[in-house]
Image (cartoon, rainbow, N blue to C red):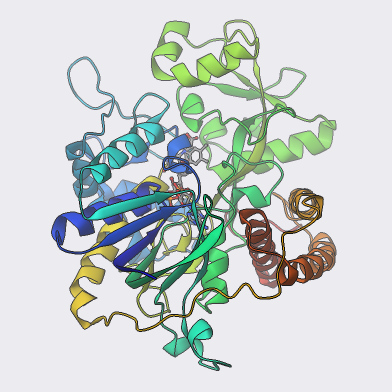
Amino acid sequence: MLKYDFLVIGSGIAGLSYALKVAQKLPDAKIAIVTKSDENESNTKYAQGGIAVVLDQIKDSYESHIKDTLKAGDGLCNEAIVRAVVTEGPDRFDELVQWGVDFDKKNAGEYDFGLEGGHSKNRILHHKDITGAEIEKRLLRQVHMLSNVKLFSQYFAVDLITQHQLVEDFKGTSKNIQCFGAYIFNADTKKIETFSAKTTMLASGGIGQVYQNTTNPIIATGDGIAMAYRAKAAIENMEFIQFHPTAMYNPLESPSFLISEAVRGFGALLRNKSGETFMHLYDDRNELASRDIVSRAIDSELKKSGDDFVYLDCRHINQADFKRHFPNILQKVNELGIDLAKDMIPVVPAAHYLCGGINVDENGQTGVKNLYACGECTNTGLHGANRLASNSLLEALVFAHRSFVKSVEKLDETRAPGHIPDWNEEGTSEPKELILITHNRKELQILMNDYVGIIRTDERLHRAAKRLHILYEETEDLYKKSKISPQIIELRNMLSVAYIIIQQSLARKENRGGFYKA
Ligand code: FAD
Ligand code: SIN
């Protein structure tokens, strides 16, 4: 058994910034970060547009950012949390800069604030169109300089350790459950190792891979949410899946490449296949309406025309300016033979962000004792029914900080766990046919795309629930017999996440923000 003071699951912006702060504050504490893939693989790495922060109190204001966030969230945000996140933003941003993250400036040396949908002011700080990659690189560099943090990559968290594993027939209510660490699969040895910890932080990111069309990388399978669900933590607002309006349409590529909303902020226009603009028919803000509105508008155009995609037109934008702001996007479209001076980019909405997740309080504490969560896996109250663009990197930083303060403060009263039994593999063997897993994963993704998409109906949701139950039974049967592998664990987690999304979609009676039932 490996013993740590802090176990952090996930190496995106949430997990890394939390670990960094704890390690700097408590040089004697032992901190482990486990991450299931390469150390930088995460949603964070692919973030393009940037981070929404009010730095310029003359041209912008906290009140304006708060108002925009509340408007996007459509009545379901927790206003106190919105206020806290927005007003703490500048301090968290300064820390990023101190950690070496480089944000674009204009010639005069002022920050270059970008514009995205739903924002009434230019307030998106960015590093070209690869903001996330820059943040991830710098945070990793800082973490590697700390001798009290050990980062384990290719280590896959399988389950949280709670009384369920320690006490036979544990019948505790969700009120008295505690977390003592996690069982982690070491991809090298193929063995499950026991990581005991006084404090566990879930920073395991989003769920996009539950859908066939998504901008999220392959790691985004909702593992942390499923683990927390099994540990009886409350999970809410899972029906609020944000679909990004402009993922590039390319059936040969998965995940879908994102064309940042900042490109529309820069003047790009949406056109149907006949070349007509259409956003004015749906919202006064045209292309810069909030994402739920733009995605539904595109969906409606596609349903009317029977087409597979609409176009994003950048032909009128100065090409040199475009290259300066969006070099990564330009390179990608050029590789596909698209010349932005002459051609338009085919785009389609894709699952992009989970607004809900594991319920946490204002300090990142879940309902399970000694278990914290931050980042995309959480439901903090910031986003309500729909996240405002570029508010998620900010949320991750603010909640990593708040969780750091609270968990360090509580460390003294947190006892180290006693003996924890090893993972029990009795009666399991290597699965003979991986196709049983890969087929069910694909079936699940198609089912979610077709039946639990941008516009839902009770009929489709009921169908989805029925089909899901079959996949669930088959997978549980296989799981009981099989040695643990990331593939089977991910499938099982994705099924749990899909189940919660469907049940919470069925339960929601009125349309709000990103949730729309016809
Ligand atoms: P992640 O960055 O996804 O990190 C999760 C980590 O957990 C990963 O290291 C993963 O490997 C690990 N993990 C998961 N499961 C396990 C397991 N079982 N065991 C061990 N490790 C595990 N937001 C913005 O604010 N601005 C943007 O411009 C922006 N652009 C985006 C563009 C794209 C293409 C995408 C996909 C998202 C974008 N977002 C943006 C959203 C934002 O990137 C994410 O919400 C944010 O990065 C989430 O950070 P995180 O640390 O919570 O999760
Ligand atoms: C984008 O660049 O369009 C993504 C921004 C976000 O998801 O917040």
